[in-house]
Amino acid sequence: MPLPTTILDGKKLPRVLFSIRPLSPFDLLKKVYGMGVTYFDLPSLKHLEKFRELRQLTEDKNLMGLCHVEAEEGASFLGKPLHQFETKVISTIRKNLNLPHTIRNLPPIPFSSDVLTQKEIDRIAFDPLRFDKALALFHPEASPFLLVGERYGDWLLALGRIDLLKEMVARMREKGFLPIYSGQWATFALPKAKSLDVVAFAIPINRKWSFFDLGQACEQIKKFDKPVISLNPLADGKLLREPEEAFSFLLNELKIYLAIVEITSEEEAHTVLEAIDRIPSLIPPRKT
Image (cartoon, rainbow, N blue to C red; front, top):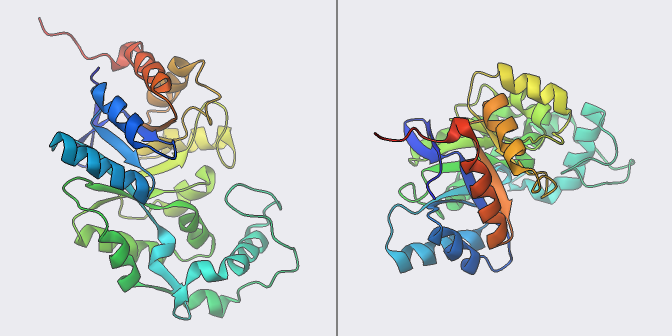
């Protein structure tokens, strides 16, 4: 079943990308490929490995993957990877943004934790060697688009270090990739990251919720003048019973460019494909 497509920076992409979530993804990857799907989201190195196995097995050069690189791969503090100071980073962000104690992608930590001083924040540096090593795992021929950011992307924005993300984006373009910024906090990330030289912005948004505020996120997306991608469009599977309404809301009402859908079974893939096929605005005109 052919999927409707969109054009992003001159390249064709399906309006829906499947993200295969089982721990052993190869069998499901192969089954969904058998349905005519040739473009997949590859959230981990294990998924990339199985994708390459399928590409080698089928010798299908139309098989493409959307790969992910964590922004933490390009940031260091005192010559060490930034994740070694995660507790201090989280504590600083909570204090600076006055965030509640429990929030997605910010693990709960003791309120008494130390925070980074402004001088320490200023000393967080771009780590080109480690970032190049991360980029070397991918190839722009099979994975022209790369998602960069994720939780550390938003954390760097919260620390006021968008300059580090700009360096990473520039490096990705030098290596022949088309960068997409991937944020977790929709209403925070879109305005903060807008100046990045990326081809699109990927954020969690669906009919049920968005971080931090659904109504505000919807208004921002409608006014946003750059392409937006929906992460988690089916709200962790809660919208699987009404997928047509879920995708119509995103693709028609919010004008989302495409949605990255997590699936755990062949049945879910069929449900999504059938829902997309029932949305009139996405059905291509028949040739006469």
